[in-house]
Amino acid sequence: MRWLLLLGLGEALLLAASLNVATYLRYFRYPDQLEEFSRHMPERSLVFAVMLLLGLAALGQYQTHMRATWFGLLARQGVGFVLGGLGLVVAYYVVPQAYVGRGVLGIALVIGFIAVTALRALFLRLVEVESFKRRVLILGAGMRASQIHSRMRRRSDRRGFTVVGFVPRPGEQLVVPVEQVLTADTLFELVEREQVDEVVVGVDDRRGGLPMEELLECRQHGVAVTDLTTFFERESGRVQLSLTDPSWLVFSGGFNATPLRQLSKRCFDLGIATLVLLLTWPFMLLVALAIRIESGAGQPIFYLQERVGVRGKSFRLAKFRSMRTDAEIDGVARWASKNDDRVTRVGRFIRKVRLDELPQLWNVLKGEMSFIGPRPERPQFVADLATKIRYYNLRHCLKPGLAGWAQLRYPYGASDEDAAEKLKYDLYYVKNHNLLFDLLILIQTIEVVLFSRGAR
Image (cartoon, rainbow, N blue to C red; front, top):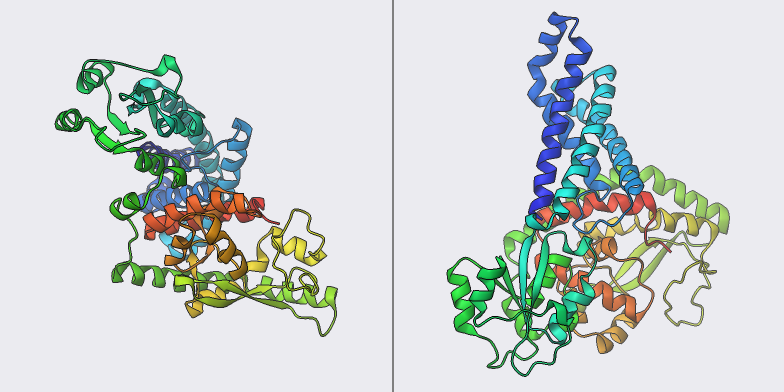
């Protein structure tokens, strides 16, 4: 996360500088106009940089585990600049002092795009340099420790750290590759020899099997000591259910439910829901008209369905009807499948661009849902999944959301296995939600809508 903040700061400075360079190139032959234009340059530079950074963030350019080709990254960056440019047009009405002419704006966008591309190319190379990564030593070499080797093996998973090796404990079955096993007389001797920054505790049996004195010695010399489950949560953005036990959930922190947090979340929900409603009501009218034309008079436009909300209480969720009215005539709840033949022609389009979700803004305004949160599921699915997936009901300690962390990080779930995978991200959000996290999810949701990711 720290290297992403550093990247964002560097790009902000470059974008601000790009506007200054563009201004000079446009007006250097006209000193009087250059002096006049430069009077509000700080405000102009700030607005220019912030709006373009928001555009890049909306396209997922600051995700920790972005996996894409260089062409894909450049395409996302280009769309991010287009979104930022549209945002600037709006911002110029709000902050007139920030206004720049079309000539300066065009030159600044070109210079900014080239500068950001060059910085990202250099920065991503530096991030991959081993000497800049946090050096991590894994205490343990059994089944738990091996999950770092098996589940975090991609380069994108290890951008922030490098595993120097595994230290087996007496009586522990060796599961990790032998060539990655390290030994020394004491743990601290190994830490000093390998210049370790963090020790991750991943032994299979912790009862009496931890070298507490040696771990304490490491702590005294400034080396971080982290539980394996916490390490997974921090580095992958999800809670690894196979490693999680109730005691870790109790003592690991998070689950912020203070009155101040509840107030900030409710204010966020009301503000964003109202803004989105004001921006999208013409599209909602067009969708309603299209459904009426396709289905004919007398057919419902909206679809009300029972969903499970906060603390397991049910509520009626509103959506634009995207399936035939006889989609579940037998009363049996079914997951939506790819190319589902129950979906109408209008429904296929509105599901792809997520317009069918817009009536849920009413549920948000009523307080039955949040704008950001775990996806609300049907009672039949919840009852079944709660018996199959451990900790499934923990996701109901928050209001369900129109958008969410799991929706961003995992495609549409249509099976028990998908539900288990999405729960890892839902629990991460439940434990770590805050106002800034909500805002980041909201911005990145724009990418989901633009590229129709995960829609069925």
